[in-house]
Image (cartoon, rainbow, N blue to C red; front, side, top):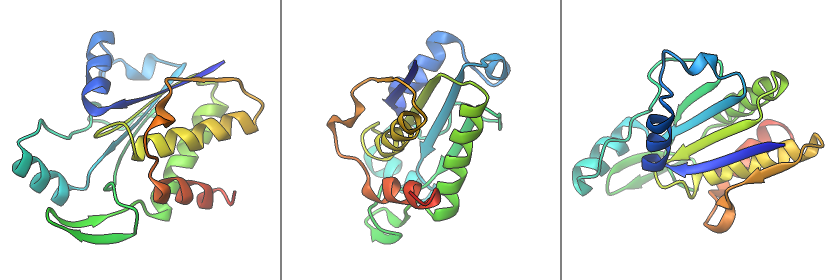
Length: 166
């Protein structure tokens, strides 16, 4: 059975901290993969300054075979101007990066998938939905944390499907 856990940034960081999963030991986790989605730098800086939220940085600072750190904004089109600056949606190249990451880790036997974005409701939920469908298409049983109850970013979901010609 595969588990997909989609979380907000804060809950993801707490889970990592509680399990003591950090850069120096994440490579030892052969049965877990992590997708961390943060905003692009301009939106991140302006949004966080305006709302005085905590930081929006990736928990894992280094690249790992089971960790994908990726940055795109939570919008439903390629580019749009917002009050926080120019926002950039997921590109097809980023979608391919995500789908390749999923495929590579699936082929290595990963069973536990942890995904997050700022709120854990739009970008990561779209990625989680794609992942769930990918696993089910491979005949896998999937348990998730009911992440689909909120809105799913349709641009992210559509780009992931486009990246694999689904």
